[in-house]
Amino acid sequence: MSDAGMGRPVEILLVEDNAGDARLAQEALNDAKVRNRITWVKDGVEALAYLHGEGIYLGSVVPDVILLDLNMPKKDGRELLADIKTDTQLRRIPVVVLTVSEAEEDILKSYDLHANCYIKKPLDLDQFLTVVKSIENFWLTIVKLPNNGKAH
Picture (cartoon, rainbow, N blue to C red):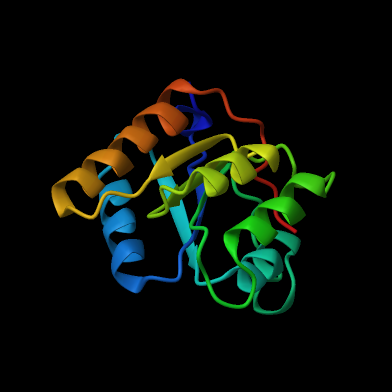
């Protein structure tokens, strides 16, 4: 079970450049059974600043789980995933790749970079909400997450 039942909300970092998809994910997660706090960033550069507590993200909380899109401007999800999984302070954070890509090379590359799972983002609204709810059910309810929720 997650730490949310013990009072501390589950910290989620949503790395997604599409505002519509980010809003839908946030709405689905806000309706979750588990208390959570979602931080949305729009690209890999902004995500790294958040993860390292730099600039406007000074004092940010290390997330318990990261939801990561692959195709983004500036620093894409593959580059960000590589940065996260090679950083000794960040590599234990579970990263859920949530992307529209079905390309076998993206799936293989993500797992080679130690993504914790790879989920194809459905284009249908109801299916998208179902997928986000499934992520919430598994990653925030069933899985025991490491205690990463400390401030920078």
